[in-house]
Image 1 (cartoon, helix red, strand yellow):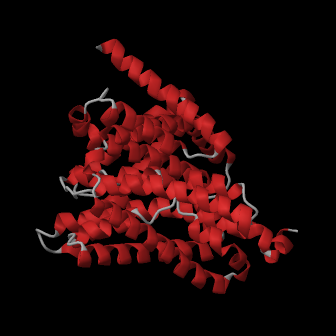
Image 2: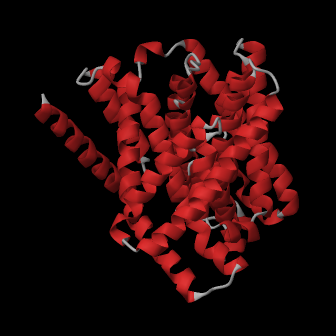
Length: 409
């Protein structure tokens, strides 16, 4: 029995590794590959029983999201993004708000979903995944401004959709007790304050102790403590983790900007971040691999109904429609984006964060019928569509659009 567990874990890791290699060569997103593997070892051949996995899903989802937030925070340079924010921020926020509104309105009005459940799917469905989007866009004949717009959109929406889901769950939690705005403000304030204080204390502890090899695992421990403490104090744990991660990742830049680049403080902080990043990529890869396989394994093909397929189709249409509306407004600010409208509008791959967020409501004992099936189908379909649209753009649109050739000449 134990040997079978180790064989399964080893196979999953190797399969994930092969998926990454395949992804680099074929540009087929590894998420599709890993979900299919999960489907094969779960519902198709029954090597893994769903009943055994379901109880651990909420815990694994929170764990995965914390690791991803740490990864995002370490690689998100606040000051560089602020310098270039403008149109990218407008584009991202418009997509998030409009997607949430239209998806929420249609599911609430025509499919009898509860309003907050419908809005939750709207938020989750609004985020584009960085890895797939940038891999596809970097292979296409597009301008620097187009690549920059897509990149910043994918980076910013990682944070906005997590924040949006956290706020909706807070609203749902406070509906019974009343004083909704006060309670939400209190929960977010507790999270922000604790995240900042513990993040600041922790980076200074690491500077003084100077044990580079243990920086990562000890920081993960601090992250777990922060999440648990914030939840105990009725704060929003994920927002606290977000603040902590951003502070750790940007501490050298913050110190340099507001205090001054004193070598005695600034350089050790940079070394700490570097030592954490050196391990983070491997851990993040491991978490992503296991989570994608996990969701494939617990996915029940029998639950896919015509109604679910209709909802997925409607959500896909809304995603593209909203991107079209948002781009038409952004193009008025930056007309150089207009020749690339097709690829910007159709660059819609959803990925890891959307998948994880589909399971987060379970943490609050909120059961949303068909949510996981819808999100998983969205991840699969948006990645496939993004690849198809990228092929269409490179094969048929670029050769016929002289504006693109002139701009890139």
